[in-house]
Structure formats: C-alpha cells, structure tokens
Amino acid sequence: MLETFLLAMGIFLILEGLGPLLVPNGWRKMLLEIISQPENQLRRIGGCLVVSGLVMVYYFA
Image (tube, rainbow, N blue to C red; front, side, top):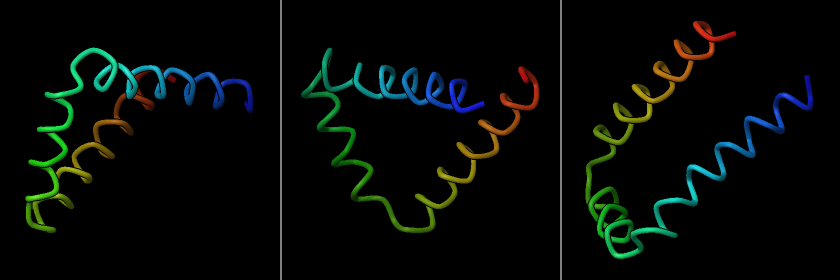
C-alpha cells in the first residue's frame, strides 16, 4: 500500500515538474492567471479536479 502511494506521488511529481521544465514562461503566465482568479472560481476548479481524480481512482483501482 505504501509502495503504491509513493509510486503515485512520484508520477505526480514528474507530471508537475514537466511544465516548468519544458515551458517555464508559459508556466509562469499560467500561475499569474490562476492567482488573479476569484476564490470561488479556484474552489470550483479544485472541486472538479478532486472529483475527476476520485473517478479515475475508482475506475482504475
């Protein structure tokens, strides 16, 4: 169980690192755009990401 979690975290870190590694200027612009969003919008985006992740975990587990 712990190995699976660590494997998932490793994959997550690889995917998260691709943005700043490959397109640092685009990644910076995206972060500035996210910062300028209202809190409600950020909560909706976060909720959608959580639900999408749960569906994927349920489907593939």
